[in-house]
Image 1 (cartoon, helix red, strand yellow):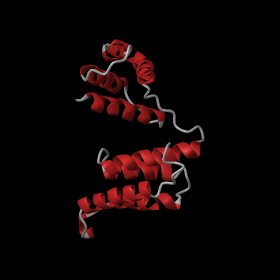
Image 2: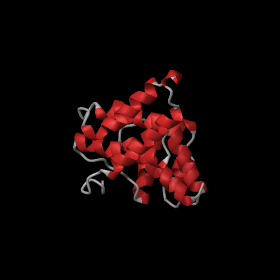
Image 3: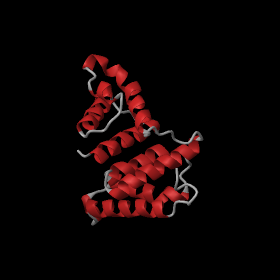
Image 4: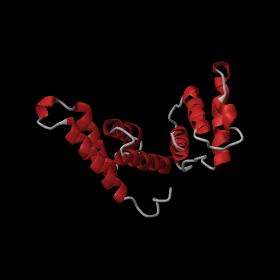
Length: 169
């Protein structure tokens, strides 16, 4: 893993946690080990990477300290609706760049975001993709790969249509 990969992993986990996703202490410590091996420099990184199983409860606070030291701490918008939209763009970006399985990503948007936002039109194509991927049957005459491709394109379209004012969040 390169230094950039390690920083990207830390940033990704920071966003997961900020958006309320559970990230286990073991994963936080492993990310610390990866970053340390990749020669990322942070005063608290070695402490995070060196935590023993009995010290795992300390991992979240140390992880946040490492993020602070590296300037990677992420705070979603305070407004709950704006936070849901930020999460939708983040997940769509991962679908579009191939770092998140389209079925998993569209399901997250459908189950964790669209419902809370009242199923807005902007998310409809991603929700449709989630429903198609979730209910797919071989008899449909379309492959899962084609449905995945449609989901990737829907994510890219969603990102392209993002208002310029929101693009910075």
